[in-house]
Amino acid sequence: MIPLILLLTIAVVFLILKRNSAKIKGATGEAKVNARLHFLGAGYISLHDVLLPNGRGATSQIDHLVLSEYGIFVIETKRYKGWIFGSEKAENWTQVLFKEKHRFRNPVKQNWSHVYALKSVLTDFPRAKYHPIVVFAGSATLKGIDSSVPVIYETALNSTIRSASTEKCLSGDEVLRIKALLESKEITERSARKEHVRTVQQDAQERRMKMNCLICPRCGGVLKPREGRHGSFYGCANYPQCRFTMP
Image (cartoon, rainbow, N blue to C red; front, side, top):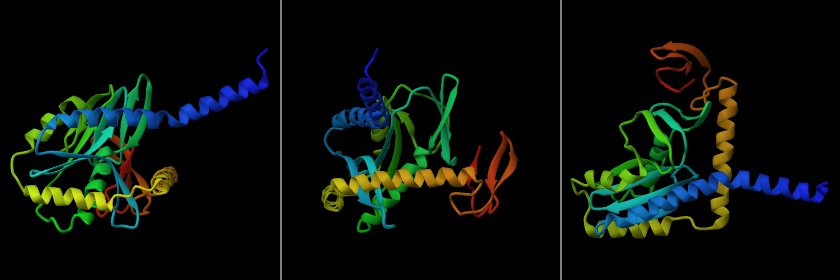
């Protein structure tokens, strides 16, 4: 018979591994992107896991930045399995894994929030162009993605960056000044990073609670049943001022 203490130990280890599995997967995906960006070559400067103030009293954590004379490439990395469906206007995207469906935050909108945070920091560089990119570094298959922002596999990242490097908007000196400014503004304290994670999790929980109560998480309006080209959905009663929808 297995001793009770051993069962409790196994249960604790299982819970810790389950809690940290998302972090481990995310770190693995980001490491793959880090390695790939290393081969971009001269003229491109890569920064990774950058935590910045977002200009609204909170923080924004950016997976990868590539600085160049062609602008700033803002990269959001995701690591998923299964099929991925999504639109840049939707609040959430869907992962289909076997017969299960899971929703996750729209990574395109998530990345645009990073762009806005960067703009609030880099006000002295109005000529800088921003190139948001969403990269899937896992084994997921992208299905029916509707987005003007590039949503690509990790293997296509460097070619996507180079294909967008067509028109210079910054000088070499400005690129170095941007790098120095971002490094001076970056939040490195461990406590601040923990607080950022806690705030993100709390915001996501509050968002889910509002949606479950049919309250628009964007403006606080009532979510009402609607009919569209693709079937039934919930839309905000304050449309067209607020265009929030959910399945």
